[in-house]
Image (cartoon, rainbow, N blue to C red):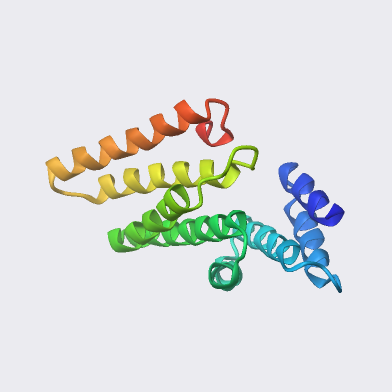
Amino acid sequence: MVGLLEGRLLEGQGKNAEAGQRYAAVEALAGATPGLVQEAKLGRGRMLLRENKAGEAEPIFRALVSEGVSPRVLSGAWNGMGELQVHDGRAKKNSERILDALYAYLRTVVQYRPLPGESTEEYERALAGAETCFRFLSELEQNPEKKRQLRDRERDRHDQLQQEYPNSVFLKK
């Protein structure tokens, strides 16, 4: 648990390489609980994303989506998949790929909402990710009425995040 907490601390300080090493060390620990190992894999996947190594991060997120046990790990894995898909969709101007990302983020919003006292980080990330997806979809949309609807949905997600978590780090992005 200490290694996982050190990884989170280093991640928060922007020391991605060091955080990735801590997460990898926790994954390799003999006798570590499956939940702890999955949290470490999730952290390593996030670090790979930050280092623009999407090809290495994607299999980690896909594995966690299928084997994850805790709602936090599952929501983090779906958010990671959403981030991969939205960047790919925006680069290729592919609205279907961005829509897939939106569904990944909304899965967290709907299915893995945190219970009172649990961390809200992944939930906040999902709301911000859904907002981004709606913005990118509206940029690609040609129909003025659909464009307006997508902008309204973008604004709704932003307002929801602002209302529920006024101090969210995702509002400052």
